[in-house]
Length: 618
Image 1 (cartoon, rainbow, N blue to C red):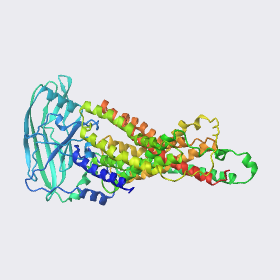
Image 2 (image 1 turned 45 degrees about the vertical axis):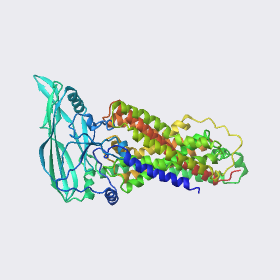
Image 3 (image 1 turned 135 degrees about the horizontal axis):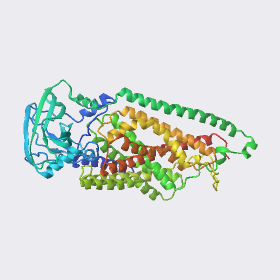
Image 4 (image 1 turned 180 degrees about the horizontal axis):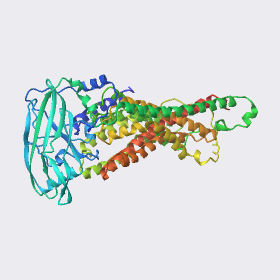
């Protein structure tokens, strides 16, 4: 009977996820350039086959959906395609129903008047003729000036194009900047029997209309062409093109070399520290295992604090909530890698990543509740209800406040980055119906867990005073030392991740990312152990929070890298893009802080238990 609530909650989670797939509105594809990667092609192909292929007959209409428009340099600042005065269908604009992840990906699918019939050639076919007013011309001029692009989908394949172009003219010795609107689109579609294989889009610069500021009205004829070409490429292999787009300047071999070079450097430093630490520990074990009473009277070093080292930390409620949430995020990351390796996140299905993050975060909430409540009980905490509630809100609370602010900014900008009310309701329902009950269920299970805290030494009734330490032994300098080495293992990969999340590349090299992820875990654990040993060696027994802060300090380094990337490696600008970048990256780095802090503390706990179990403590 006790298992029924858990089963009901899991069933509700799956049902709610299915509802979210059918209710929410959004857009499917990520945007633009893919990065050459290494992955299991058979797994990725299997994932694609699950979607099923659309088949067409001669003359059957191939749907063309317009997703979004926006400044090319500001990937978060996107707007509906209909926000610009393009041609619209005579029967009115229809909106495609999309799943939860596609909505979060800030896309909206609108129908278009482009009549694409399967295997039917078209040459400069008129779409519509519009008389653009001064207001509409100014809207197009703004789009051309800010280098806006548009994104469309044909048979779930993405195509991109720019709204127009600017040219510099010299008239009577004066320089003049003119704006031109592209009015002709050409689709080149490749097919194999009854399936669409590949599509590309181009605009004709010779068919552009001058919309410079001196133009107050313009008659514009929008046209399009469609070319069909038969190929032998199988439908299962049609996404390989998106893995080899020419805009990618980095070859896989160079990428591997950079990663290996960084990892070897870090491993050499780690091995060097490990050798020194093992030698010192071996000497300490020999010294402290000696039964000579004279040595016991003259204790010094880490054995001297054996009566305080297992004294529970202050603010134990918050500490356990951090540990529980960090453990949940760690397992969430493993689930993301598992889905990636089975082909869930293939290039044009980027919205799936958001769906997995939302649903799996909800389903792994029981891990946070169980771990937090279990440690809280072991550390003799009594306010277990408060601990469970704190675990529910310790990450979701700040994230919700940040989301509310950023979503308000997007609403003011009328951007598609603003989630619709229905999508917000769905996410809140997932949190209220799944996340909170699972956290409570896990917390109750952790509270009832009979495991005792394993402490090899008895704790003294009164704590020893920590001796005065030099400045470089304090928390902040040690956090700097602890964060630098793990950060050096991942900084090469950070650029590609940022270029995917905050740019126009699609990240698919999950194998390399997993290797870097594992090295990050190992290096974080080891450097935290080393600093914990050095802290105990100077008779500072307050290692609990220090090990957590040192382990999580890499998240602070990553947030520092955000400033470098924003100002030196990107062209992002504007209030909305700036707030979205630094706001959401603050939440991501906070998640990193919790996860790596948990890894560092757990590694230090195992180490401390081991060294005090290996010596004679009274």
